[in-house]
Image (cartoon, rainbow, N blue to C red; front, side, top):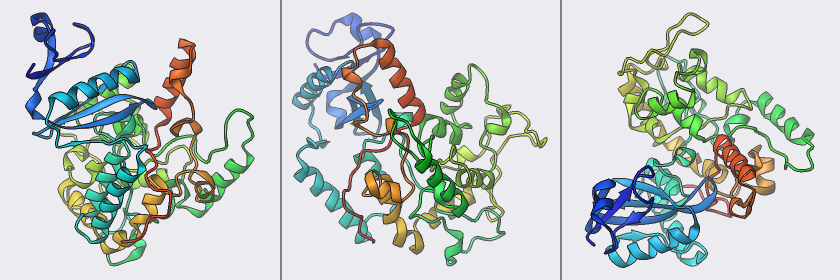
Length: 385
């Protein structure tokens, strides 16, 4: 066999083919095929909190995420690919903490030596924590870095223009932080652990909110809303208004997606989609930008400079603690106002052990709706740059 054949679930048996027994019919039904020689990387992934997925990357940078019915099936396919492909990288067993910890340590030190930009470091942490462009429920997550969306010019030498990276979005405003603290302390349910927020900073819904104007996300958004766009007042309309919402509501605490730092297209309605008219009589079209941005391209350029600024560089480790590190869970998370609904954390429920199909489906739906917290990478506080 010289190729991997990916079979659509509506056609031939749903499996990764490529063994000598692969028939001509299977080959004809293949939705996609990759030469074995092109498969460069392989990483195990989880899907809806179950470790049954596998992500492959080829030497052109294309990738595909495959979810299997069982972990055993994934193991079989993974073993076959290891034998047949000359991989430049494959993930090691994360239970072997020495190897995985060494990789993390080397990555961290490269960032501290400024051999990696802030953007590249965050993208690498996302990858190691299991985040992927191929899974809307585990899309890479990046931080809001600015708080000033009203000034006519952006002064990156002024610390006041930046968001507080030591606090989650729901605790940026002191009054809102006090409210979520009270919510946590007053919550009392024998079956559900306490939490500060009923929503999450990263979910499929949040990704579709941000990328509404770009295909295929436009189509996904329409499908999510039963064949139409959501109400105009609930669509991504203004950066300033959305930042205010994310800092003044415990039900909207979204962080950003990577496109905010390199892709101006998602801010423009180049497709001419009819997104409706808001209650304030404003038609939703291109995203309303801050006064300091002359265009979508200019916003991306200035936003990227903000991410790579000295202020963000000296505080970014604090945000890493919240998302990937020591303040992600436990007492430290509680003190940081950083506790989310329990189903967003790995290990909260073992779906594979749930025998009742209806119960399993209900839990899967809840996980898909609430979002997923990344795999915790660091147990100790992250050192500064």
